[in-house]
Length: 353
Image (tube, rainbow, N blue to C red):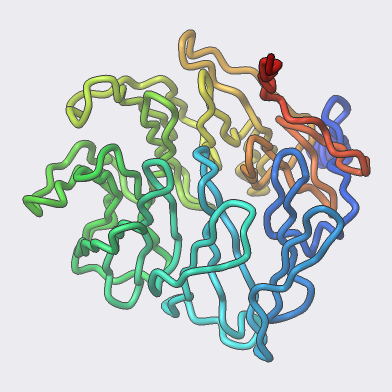
Protein backbone atom coordinates (compact mmCIF):
# COMPACT_ATOMS: atom_id res chain seq x y z
CA UNK A 1 0.00 0.00 0.00
CA UNK A 2 2.89 2.32 0.75
CA UNK A 3 4.31 1.71 -2.74
CA UNK A 4 0.99 2.65 -4.35
CA UNK A 5 0.79 5.88 -2.36
CA UNK A 6 4.33 6.81 -3.34
CA UNK A 7 3.58 6.14 -7.00
CA UNK A 8 0.43 8.26 -6.97
CA UNK A 9 2.28 11.04 -5.18
CA UNK A 10 5.06 10.98 -7.76
CA UNK A 11 2.61 11.00 -10.67
CA UNK A 12 0.92 14.12 -9.28
CA UNK A 13 4.14 16.11 -9.09
CA UNK A 14 4.38 18.98 -11.54
CA UNK A 15 7.47 20.57 -12.99
CA UNK A 16 8.04 23.32 -10.43
CA UNK A 17 11.06 24.95 -12.05
CA UNK A 18 10.34 24.35 -15.75
CA UNK A 19 8.17 26.87 -17.60
CA UNK A 20 5.37 25.79 -19.89
CA UNK A 21 5.64 26.48 -23.61
CA UNK A 22 3.29 29.25 -24.75
CA UNK A 23 2.59 30.20 -28.36
CA UNK A 24 -0.33 31.72 -30.26
CA UNK A 25 -0.74 28.52 -32.25
CA UNK A 26 -2.38 25.35 -31.07
CA UNK A 27 0.30 22.98 -29.83
CA UNK A 28 -1.44 20.11 -31.62
CA UNK A 29 -1.02 21.87 -34.98
CA UNK A 30 2.67 22.84 -34.68
CA UNK A 31 5.06 20.68 -36.68
CA UNK A 32 8.11 22.94 -36.28
CA UNK A 33 8.75 26.35 -34.75
CA UNK A 34 12.00 28.31 -34.80
CA UNK A 35 13.66 29.42 -31.60
CA UNK A 36 12.63 33.07 -32.04
CA UNK A 37 9.15 32.24 -33.33
CA UNK A 38 9.70 33.92 -36.71
CA UNK A 39 8.69 30.80 -38.64
CA UNK A 40 6.00 28.36 -37.50
CA UNK A 41 5.09 25.36 -39.61
CA UNK A 42 1.58 24.17 -38.81
CA UNK A 43 -0.76 21.45 -40.02
CA UNK A 44 -3.97 23.37 -40.68
CA UNK A 45 -5.96 20.20 -41.45
CA UNK A 46 -5.30 16.74 -42.83
CA UNK A 47 -3.23 17.08 -46.00
CA UNK A 48 -2.46 20.80 -45.58
CA UNK A 49 0.87 22.11 -44.27
CA UNK A 50 1.43 25.84 -43.91
CA UNK A 51 4.03 28.27 -42.61
CA UNK A 52 3.25 31.37 -40.53
CA UNK A 53 5.70 34.27 -40.74
CA UNK A 54 5.32 38.05 -40.32
CA UNK A 55 1.61 37.59 -39.50
CA UNK A 56 0.98 35.86 -42.85
CA UNK A 57 0.08 32.23 -43.52
CA UNK A 58 1.17 30.39 -46.66
CA UNK A 59 0.01 26.89 -47.61
CA UNK A 60 2.83 25.12 -49.46
CA UNK A 61 1.69 21.49 -49.27
CA UNK A 62 -2.01 20.99 -49.89
CA UNK A 63 -4.06 18.09 -51.22
CA UNK A 64 -7.32 16.28 -50.56
CA UNK A 65 -5.75 13.27 -48.86
CA UNK A 66 -5.62 12.38 -45.18
CA UNK A 67 -1.87 12.93 -44.98
CA UNK A 68 -0.10 13.89 -41.79
CA UNK A 69 3.32 15.53 -41.51
CA UNK A 70 6.48 15.14 -39.48
CA UNK A 71 9.15 17.86 -39.51
CA UNK A 72 12.71 17.79 -38.25
CA UNK A 73 15.67 20.16 -38.36
CA UNK A 74 19.31 20.09 -37.28
CA UNK A 75 21.78 22.30 -35.47
CA UNK A 76 22.97 23.71 -38.82
CA UNK A 77 19.66 25.51 -39.56
CA UNK A 78 19.93 25.38 -43.35
CA UNK A 79 17.06 23.06 -44.23
CA UNK A 80 14.11 21.21 -42.72
CA UNK A 81 12.87 17.67 -43.35
CA UNK A 82 9.23 16.96 -44.08
CA UNK A 83 7.96 13.38 -43.88
CA UNK A 84 4.55 13.06 -45.51
CA UNK A 85 2.66 10.16 -43.91
CA UNK A 86 -0.13 8.96 -46.23
CA UNK A 87 -3.45 8.08 -44.56
CA UNK A 88 -1.76 7.88 -41.18
CA UNK A 89 -5.04 7.22 -39.34
CA UNK A 90 -6.32 4.63 -41.82
CA UNK A 91 -3.40 2.31 -42.59
CA UNK A 92 -1.16 1.23 -39.70
CA UNK A 93 1.63 -0.39 -41.72
CA UNK A 94 5.05 -0.34 -40.07
CA UNK A 95 6.75 -1.18 -43.38
CA UNK A 96 5.10 1.63 -45.34
CA UNK A 97 7.43 4.30 -46.67
CA UNK A 98 6.77 8.03 -46.29
CA UNK A 99 7.42 10.72 -48.86
CA UNK A 100 10.64 12.50 -47.81
CA UNK A 101 10.94 16.19 -48.71
CA UNK A 102 13.28 19.05 -47.77
CA UNK A 103 12.64 22.79 -47.65
CA UNK A 104 15.12 25.61 -47.16
CA UNK A 105 14.98 27.30 -43.76
CA UNK A 106 11.99 29.66 -43.64
CA UNK A 107 10.98 28.92 -47.25
CA UNK A 108 7.92 27.33 -48.85
CA UNK A 109 9.24 25.45 -51.89
CA UNK A 110 9.74 21.78 -50.91
CA UNK A 111 11.80 19.31 -52.92
CA UNK A 112 11.20 15.55 -52.84
CA UNK A 113 14.33 13.51 -52.13
CA UNK A 114 13.01 9.96 -51.78
CA UNK A 115 10.80 7.44 -50.00
CA UNK A 116 11.50 6.07 -46.52
CA UNK A 117 11.38 6.76 -42.80
CA UNK A 118 13.50 8.21 -40.02
CA UNK A 119 15.09 10.92 -42.17
CA UNK A 120 18.01 12.96 -40.79
CA UNK A 121 20.04 15.91 -42.04
CA UNK A 122 23.85 15.86 -41.92
CA UNK A 123 26.96 17.97 -42.58
CA UNK A 124 25.62 21.52 -42.79
CA UNK A 125 22.32 20.09 -44.08
CA UNK A 126 23.86 19.20 -47.43
CA UNK A 127 23.25 15.47 -46.87
CA UNK A 128 20.18 13.50 -45.88
CA UNK A 129 19.67 9.88 -44.82
CA UNK A 130 16.49 7.80 -44.60
CA UNK A 131 15.52 4.14 -44.26
CA UNK A 132 13.25 1.85 -46.29
CA UNK A 133 11.97 -0.92 -43.93
CA UNK A 134 10.68 -3.22 -46.68
CA UNK A 135 13.99 -3.15 -48.59
CA UNK A 136 16.17 -2.86 -45.45
CA UNK A 137 18.09 -0.07 -47.18
CA UNK A 138 19.65 3.08 -45.73
CA UNK A 139 19.83 5.76 -48.41
CA UNK A 140 22.40 8.54 -48.03
CA UNK A 141 21.91 11.38 -50.52
CA UNK A 142 23.59 14.68 -51.27
CA UNK A 143 20.82 17.26 -51.60
CA UNK A 144 22.89 19.58 -53.80
CA UNK A 145 24.49 17.11 -56.24
CA UNK A 146 21.85 14.34 -56.02
CA UNK A 147 24.64 11.79 -55.50
CA UNK A 148 23.10 8.78 -53.76
CA UNK A 149 24.42 5.75 -51.87
CA UNK A 150 22.53 2.71 -50.56
CA UNK A 151 23.58 0.63 -47.55
CA UNK A 152 22.06 -2.83 -47.19
CA UNK A 153 21.33 -3.96 -43.64
CA UNK A 154 21.43 -7.51 -42.27
CA UNK A 155 19.05 -10.19 -43.49
CA UNK A 156 16.83 -10.03 -40.41
CA UNK A 157 13.62 -8.14 -41.20
CA UNK A 158 12.00 -6.45 -38.21
CA UNK A 159 9.18 -3.93 -38.72
CA UNK A 160 9.99 -2.41 -35.32
CA UNK A 161 13.66 -1.66 -36.11
CA UNK A 162 14.73 1.64 -37.65
CA UNK A 163 18.50 2.20 -37.74
CA UNK A 164 20.17 5.25 -36.26
CA UNK A 165 22.40 7.09 -38.76
CA UNK A 166 25.04 9.81 -38.36
CA UNK A 167 27.56 11.18 -40.89
CA UNK A 168 30.98 12.25 -39.65
CA UNK A 169 32.35 13.16 -43.11
CA UNK A 170 31.22 13.18 -46.74
CA UNK A 171 32.36 9.57 -47.15
CA UNK A 172 31.93 8.12 -43.64
CA UNK A 173 28.62 7.00 -42.13
CA UNK A 174 27.97 5.47 -38.72
CA UNK A 175 24.78 3.41 -38.33
CA UNK A 176 23.20 0.76 -36.12
CA UNK A 177 22.16 -2.72 -37.21
CA UNK A 178 20.81 -5.87 -35.57
CA UNK A 179 21.68 -9.50 -36.30
CA UNK A 180 19.49 -12.61 -36.32
CA UNK A 181 20.10 -13.21 -32.60
CA UNK A 182 18.79 -9.77 -31.70
CA UNK A 183 22.20 -8.30 -30.84
CA UNK A 184 22.64 -4.68 -31.89
CA UNK A 185 25.89 -3.26 -33.23
CA UNK A 186 27.41 -0.03 -34.48
CA UNK A 187 29.06 0.00 -37.92
CA UNK A 188 31.37 2.55 -39.52
CA UNK A 189 30.81 2.48 -43.29
CA UNK A 190 32.86 4.05 -46.08
CA UNK A 191 30.60 5.19 -48.93
CA UNK A 192 33.43 5.16 -51.48
CA UNK A 193 34.88 1.70 -50.78
CA UNK A 194 31.50 0.30 -49.65
CA UNK A 195 33.19 -1.45 -46.73
CA UNK A 196 32.27 -1.35 -43.07
CA UNK A 197 33.87 -2.16 -39.73
CA UNK A 198 32.19 -2.89 -36.41
CA UNK A 199 32.85 -0.14 -33.88
CA UNK A 200 30.73 -1.60 -31.08
CA UNK A 201 28.76 -4.78 -30.46
CA UNK A 202 26.40 -5.21 -27.53
CA UNK A 203 27.02 -7.96 -24.99
CA UNK A 204 23.30 -8.43 -24.40
CA UNK A 205 20.15 -8.96 -26.44
CA UNK A 206 17.01 -6.86 -26.31
CA UNK A 207 18.69 -3.45 -26.50
CA UNK A 208 18.74 -0.59 -29.00
CA UNK A 209 21.37 1.98 -29.93
CA UNK A 210 20.67 5.70 -30.11
CA UNK A 211 23.03 8.15 -31.82
CA UNK A 212 23.43 11.89 -31.55
CA UNK A 213 26.25 14.15 -32.65
CA UNK A 214 27.61 17.22 -30.93
CA UNK A 215 30.07 19.76 -32.25
CA UNK A 216 33.12 17.53 -31.73
CA UNK A 217 31.81 14.21 -30.46
CA UNK A 218 29.51 11.31 -31.25
CA UNK A 219 27.38 9.86 -28.44
CA UNK A 220 26.06 6.29 -28.46
CA UNK A 221 23.36 5.31 -26.00
CA UNK A 222 22.48 1.67 -25.41
CA UNK A 223 19.09 1.21 -23.77
CA UNK A 224 16.73 -1.77 -23.41
CA UNK A 225 13.43 -2.10 -25.13
CA UNK A 226 10.35 -1.54 -23.00
CA UNK A 227 9.60 -4.22 -20.36
CA UNK A 228 13.02 -5.85 -20.82
CA UNK A 229 15.28 -5.98 -17.79
CA UNK A 230 18.68 -4.95 -19.18
CA UNK A 231 21.42 -2.51 -18.22
CA UNK A 232 22.04 0.89 -19.87
CA UNK A 233 25.16 2.74 -20.95
CA UNK A 234 26.32 5.79 -22.90
CA UNK A 235 29.56 5.91 -24.92
CA UNK A 236 31.39 8.88 -26.40
CA UNK A 237 33.68 8.97 -29.44
CA UNK A 238 35.71 12.17 -30.05
CA UNK A 239 35.57 13.54 -33.60
CA UNK A 240 38.68 15.72 -33.44
CA UNK A 241 40.73 13.17 -35.39
CA UNK A 242 38.50 13.10 -38.47
CA UNK A 243 37.19 9.70 -39.50
CA UNK A 244 39.36 7.72 -37.07
CA UNK A 245 36.62 6.46 -34.76
CA UNK A 246 38.56 3.64 -33.13
CA UNK A 247 38.11 3.66 -29.37
CA UNK A 248 35.40 5.09 -27.17
CA UNK A 249 34.90 6.16 -23.56
CA UNK A 250 32.07 4.90 -21.37
CA UNK A 251 30.70 8.05 -19.75
CA UNK A 252 27.62 6.45 -18.15
CA UNK A 253 26.76 2.94 -17.04
CA UNK A 254 23.85 1.67 -14.95
CA UNK A 255 22.03 -1.55 -14.13
CA UNK A 256 18.75 0.36 -14.54
CA UNK A 257 16.60 -0.06 -17.63
CA UNK A 258 16.65 3.57 -18.72
CA UNK A 259 14.38 4.91 -21.45
CA UNK A 260 17.13 6.83 -23.25
CA UNK A 261 16.05 9.36 -25.92
CA UNK A 262 19.49 11.03 -25.82
CA UNK A 263 19.91 14.61 -27.03
CA UNK A 264 23.41 16.02 -27.60
CA UNK A 265 24.29 19.55 -26.51
CA UNK A 266 27.67 21.29 -26.74
CA UNK A 267 29.09 20.29 -23.34
CA UNK A 268 26.44 17.90 -22.06
CA UNK A 269 23.66 15.59 -23.13
CA UNK A 270 20.16 14.82 -21.89
CA UNK A 271 18.48 11.44 -21.53
CA UNK A 272 15.53 9.90 -19.68
CA UNK A 273 16.66 7.89 -16.69
CA UNK A 274 14.74 5.36 -14.63
CA UNK A 275 14.85 6.67 -11.07
CA UNK A 276 12.81 3.87 -9.50
CA UNK A 277 11.62 0.56 -10.95
CA UNK A 278 9.03 -1.36 -8.95
CA UNK A 279 9.32 -4.69 -10.74
CA UNK A 280 6.45 -6.42 -8.94
CA UNK A 281 4.07 -3.79 -10.34
CA UNK A 282 6.11 -3.10 -13.50
CA UNK A 283 6.06 0.63 -12.79
CA UNK A 284 8.92 3.00 -13.62
CA UNK A 285 9.44 6.48 -12.28
CA UNK A 286 11.42 8.35 -14.94
CA UNK A 287 12.99 11.81 -15.15
CA UNK A 288 15.18 13.80 -17.53
CA UNK A 289 18.79 13.98 -16.40
CA UNK A 290 21.72 16.03 -17.67
CA UNK A 291 25.07 14.29 -18.14
CA UNK A 292 28.09 16.60 -18.06
CA UNK A 293 30.58 15.37 -20.66
CA UNK A 294 33.68 16.59 -18.82
CA UNK A 295 32.91 15.41 -15.28
CA UNK A 296 30.37 12.66 -16.21
CA UNK A 297 28.26 13.93 -13.31
CA UNK A 298 24.46 13.57 -13.56
CA UNK A 299 21.95 16.23 -12.58
CA UNK A 300 18.19 15.56 -12.36
CA UNK A 301 16.33 18.20 -14.38
CA UNK A 302 12.64 17.34 -13.81
CA UNK A 303 10.31 16.17 -11.08
CA UNK A 304 7.39 15.00 -13.22
CA UNK A 305 7.61 11.36 -12.17
CA UNK A 306 6.75 9.89 -15.57
CA UNK A 307 8.74 11.42 -18.45
CA UNK A 308 8.57 9.38 -21.65
CA UNK A 309 9.87 11.69 -24.38
CA UNK A 310 11.94 14.77 -25.22
CA UNK A 311 11.71 16.83 -28.40
CA UNK A 312 14.60 18.92 -29.76
CA UNK A 313 13.46 21.81 -31.96
CA UNK A 314 15.89 24.59 -32.95
CA UNK A 315 17.78 25.23 -29.69
CA UNK A 316 14.68 24.36 -27.69
CA UNK A 317 14.16 21.13 -25.74
CA UNK A 318 10.53 20.31 -24.98
CA UNK A 319 9.06 17.72 -22.63
CA UNK A 320 5.48 16.64 -23.45
CA UNK A 321 3.51 15.86 -20.33
CA UNK A 322 -0.28 15.46 -19.97
CA UNK A 323 -1.26 17.86 -22.73
CA UNK A 324 1.37 20.49 -21.92
CA UNK A 325 4.93 21.06 -23.08
CA UNK A 326 7.60 22.03 -20.56
CA UNK A 327 10.71 23.85 -21.76
CA UNK A 328 13.98 22.33 -20.62
CA UNK A 329 16.12 24.66 -22.75
CA UNK A 330 15.29 27.68 -24.88
CA UNK A 331 12.63 30.37 -24.88
CA UNK A 332 9.25 29.43 -23.47
CA UNK A 333 6.92 32.37 -24.19
CA UNK A 334 6.29 33.30 -27.83
CA UNK A 335 3.10 35.28 -27.22
CA UNK A 336 4.71 38.68 -27.86
CA UNK A 337 3.83 40.36 -31.18
CA UNK A 338 7.05 42.37 -31.23
CA UNK A 339 9.82 40.89 -33.31
CA UNK A 340 13.23 41.07 -31.68
CA UNK A 341 15.93 43.09 -33.43
CA UNK A 342 18.70 41.15 -35.22
CA UNK A 343 21.53 40.18 -32.89
CA UNK A 344 24.20 40.94 -35.50
CA UNK A 345 25.50 44.51 -35.23
CA UNK A 346 25.03 46.58 -38.38
CA UNK A 347 28.21 48.43 -39.37
CA UNK A 348 27.84 52.18 -39.89
CA UNK A 349 28.61 53.41 -43.42
CA UNK A 350 31.15 56.29 -43.73
CA UNK A 351 29.75 59.67 -44.73
CA UNK A 352 30.55 60.83 -48.25
CA UNK A 353 32.57 64.07 -48.43
